[in-house]
Image (cartoon, rainbow, N blue to C red; front, side, top):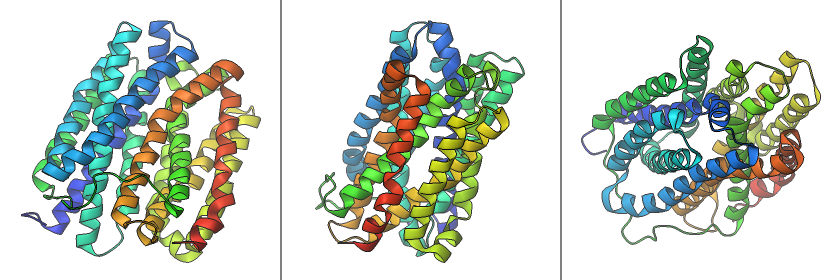
Length: 379
């Protein structure tokens, strides 16, 4: 680690994950307000969310090239600050076009930050010679809980959405600036390709990562509307679903290393997938608000350790270099969390939002179904 000790590097990585989760989740409670402000339907909102996803995926592809040339450190700093600057515009953009542009820029900053911080996390974990990835991702979940909870609380107190967005932007910017001097210098292997499409068993790992992240993205962007449209909570409390989901996922990840050590990768994936499926059933079938919202708890607990296990399996497989496998799965997974919700909007316009969530449950079935295949075959 160049000029930075291991403890400081771990702290900086955690702050980067915290900032990314906080910034992303701060947008969730603002979605219904944006829909109301612009007087648009679910289909139009889905197209706007696609702007966020497109910006993210394009930035992810560029981040690989920039990381090879400059390392992950400057990209974490620049992309985090771009995301912070874009956040207030999400709350007052007066037209669909301006909101689409703001979402594109916000998504570009977030997507670039996501890839860069995972590259940085891999290097920090290697230098530490002990598992750290679950803990880093737990900080993303903690940030998600903090972002959604703080914005929901401010909205419930009557603060304007733009004020909430500015406060969240300041939190993200401060976290990134504090991490700046503690980030390590990283360099990609000049002889390795900048990106590789997944192949072999990595294809299945990437598929499950996309499904899991898609579920998280859909809950981020659509849970508030799902609850408010069903009359389960008032508009100002729409973010409660993502709050409890984030809290459950955070708890699951904080204890995830111990759980996986006891159960093993197969049972962690198999039972985690089944618990998440049970959560979808509770959420969509029960009409009692408290019990229905508890469905988000089950989804969060079930899905919490799926992605860390997938990253671990990517490092152990032999189909392609582990570093390239992790990069491919990261890009595919985050493409799911950022672009998938636009598809949910399109489906919701045709058959309704509850039916679209049933579709997510159908995709989640792949996790327990494929758990044996991906844990038994590493080559």
